[in-house]
Image (cartoon, rainbow, N blue to C red; front, side, top):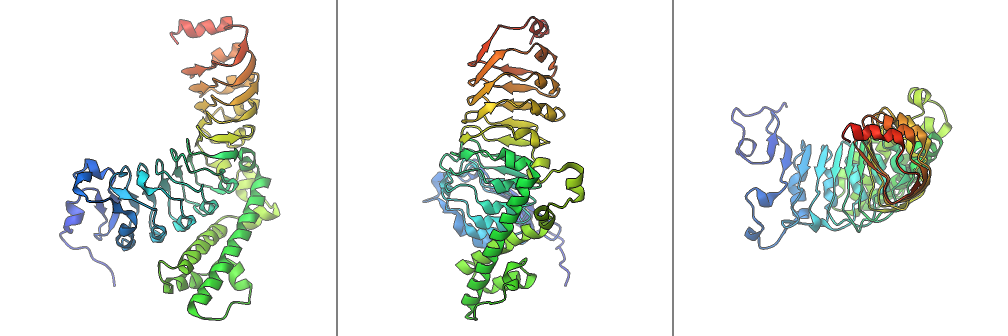
Length: 412
């Protein structure tokens, strides 16, 4: 039976602030950000609203595409409900600025297969970023900055996120080597894809066994039932399991990971075969999608030689980390796109590459507080778009080149 919208939309579609409906009077956007500034003062509540109490209501909104609960640290409290993973229609989920949500990010959020924007900045999160988020193949923006206790390493698997344009995990206690080289190399991504498939198959097998146990049926013996891509029937069968049970959660996770496996050209990647995309550019995942990379204020180590492999970078901020090595002259390959390069407060050494003069779109270059040596390149004066240049607190010698007087004459 076809749904028909009533002639007069219900009051919540017409009058409720932050609510947007479609033509069928279904809620598609729910923006409850900054409740304290929209008529619900914290003093009107005896205690904060537990986020988990909203989950049953939100799960009924089967067409919900945007959910924003941002900037409600005095009104909402956590932990982040795993049941949010059932809102499969979500495209935008913004919980940023709600510090009361302190807890780790559940790997079950990988089940949000339509998610395009995820905001969890300043939520006091812990436990690191889940590897399972590699399943979010439609994700374009991931903001998780300001979570000082988040910790952990940046997952190498994120190099397979083929739609991600912005990754912002600044000031979040990240440590370990930044996997730039792996992200930019097709061979490394083929290996990562193979490992992801193996993990997804193991999850599927465990979920299938848990599902059988919950139903009281004998364990499965045919590996093909659990090691292939989770079938529609198997995923549907999970609905019969109580929504809050561990069995249900395992099934959601397995289905999400296998959804990733079905979309990615994994077979081609594993075998080293070329697809039309890899034949043309050898770009896989982040190498062909990432535009904004902000990881400042962490404890990341390693070199930055892999940056040139991320071909669409426009903004790079790796300042205040522990990055080492030299500035790669190959960064000049990012000339068409790179506008901001912030690498201050690291342990970078060597000379300033003359090749940087090719960065015609560069507007901001911050390299202060490193161990750079040598002379200032004469040719930098040709960087016509450059507005900010900070080379202080290095070991540079020789004074300003005479050619740089042209900048002064232009008032810069």
